[in-house]
Amino acid sequence: MTPVGAAERRRRAGHDGAVVWITGLSGAGKTTLAQALERALFDRGCGVFVLDGDKVRHGLCADLGFSLPERSENVRRIGEVARLYYEAGQIAIVSVISPLRADRARARALIPAPHFIEVHCDCPLAVCEARDPKGLYRKARAGLLPEFTGITSPYEAPEAPDVLLDSAAASVEQEVGRLMAELQRRGIVADSIH
Image 1: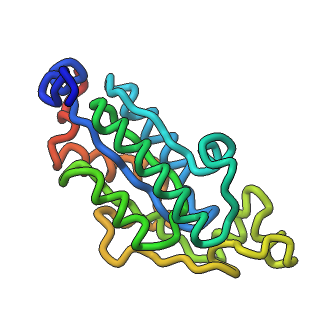
Image 2 (image 1 turned 30 degrees about the vertical axis):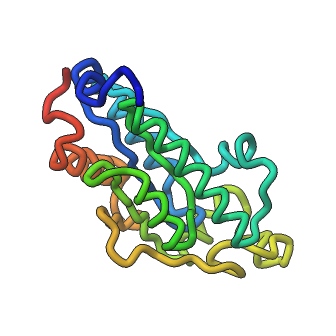
């Protein structure tokens, strides 16, 4: 038990803690969206931080590979870190493929409703491959990445995400606007800048 309660943290920060969990295929726009949302929330005075899957893999999860059990452990660790941000009254934006529904459900179970928001960046595989910002699809198609999500490893899209974004059609500004509206609707952030 911490001597500083959630109500005190909210009064100080001007917002509740939350986890915005952005899932989708590689190249779907998760990181771009996460960074734009972080900027928008920070500019409103919110305590916010992005937990990006690639960055976490280079540090906290550097000991893990890409088999499904290792991917599950990666998501478990990120979920636990996100929970700590939530408990500190911060808004954690998680940008990670997190390919399995069960793993995302486990992360959701760590955060009380309505403070966990699952966001699906829904983008057709063909569009993700055309974007291919890191050249990963090209490597996967050449057989150089044997366990690549969406090609040789499964991706289970959310069946009922809290927010579904068509990241092939909507602009980043439109997507951020929808997420800000959802955060406001849930009472996590106020309608006005403090």
